[in-house]
Image 1 (cartoon, one colour):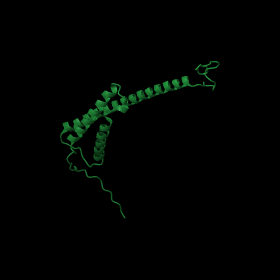
Image 2 (tube, one colour):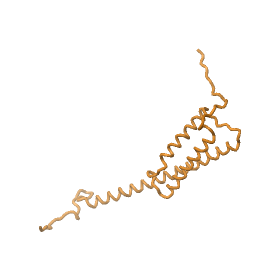
Image 3 (cartoon, one colour):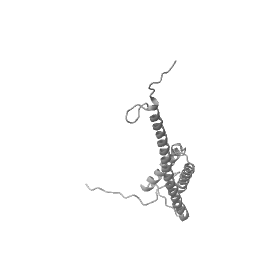
Image 4 (cartoon, helix red, strand yellow):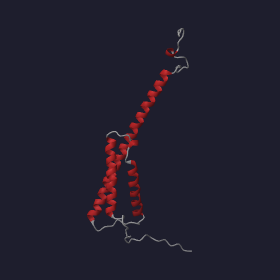
Length: 154
């Protein structure tokens, strides 16, 4: 039995509403706006865990990923005789890439700052606990917690 392989059609696939280049540009612009807004908040010192942009980035990122998959599987063709529109798509994708690169750097910095705050709190707690402990590191009773020879009158 001979197997036949079909190659994907090179003809333009009809696009449904929401599958036009203009829609892709709107999606990219929305992603750029959300990421830029988050970058500005992170630059002001907002902890990454408090970012209100995460859910929107996930939703827009999922939509963008669907576009990429559809284009790579040739379900949607982004062919256009309009050279200026093609250039605009490439320029916006480049801008998105720059914004996302900055976002990764800012998120890493915010996470590192949060880790430093956690480490400082933990160190303070450990210090406080060791000062109030009746025993020192060798297991002996700390001098400040021992009350030898002191009579308490009631």
